[in-house]
Image 1 (cartoon, rainbow, N blue to C red):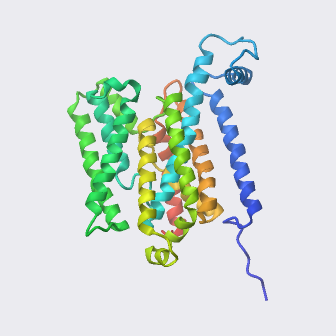
Image 2: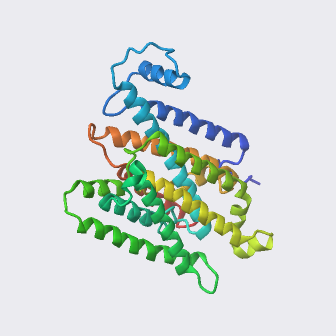
Image 3: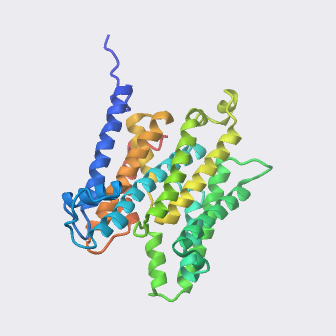
Length: 356
């Protein structure tokens, strides 16, 4: 009698899982190093080493032999942008996992509840009318976050029927809220003089951009991401059970209402902050969880950390392409992520037959 052949993927053994994570860490480190070097201005590795070591140790370990402005390009522009790309990619992936668990829908992504469109409306309104100008560089960030909060509150109010919210009602409410805020955003852009700098800025921001990255914005995004990541790692068993259905989860003692509320709060907070610093970047939260799930399996204790590495690495590489493909010009990173994400997602649908 022939033994049943066990497929290699998803990875079953803990050793294989750790090897995969190790490979992703190596790929991430290589991508980060290349991202510091490549761009409209190419930098030598010895210059990168000298600037980074001198800055980290806050003293001149390596003599300053590079031209003036190189240190500013590397330390104040390029490195914050690279780290922001990782945080944004990992954060969007985490939100994608949470939305797919919450709605039990493999097509769900971080923007399924209208959070993205709400954040876009808030940011575009600030760009167009400048009513938060007193906040300086944080004006767009605050406007986007406020829009995200308003959109999720509105979606929850619409979806609440007899003091109960179901996944189907929430998705339908999210579609309605997305349409509403999308219309408001388009109206503001259309109403403003075509060709103006404000319209160009708003349009570029809506396609996704990391050009406004800074150490300050990175700090807030990183704190939010780490807190959300730790909270979800503590709830991984509940996420596994929730996929089996609310009735099953309640039977084994999971407070589904509390868990769903935690998911919504985390997804709203993290998506709002991410969109506020990077604009709308599609397909990361949609495709990366699928890719990683097919490799490491569906248990969230393994899926979440591995997905963070894959999503962060993917966006670092996408940012390299956005800065180099049409250099010295720059492509919106949302265009690059969609260019690679959309075909792969279609492949996944064909391969899985639409099964979660």
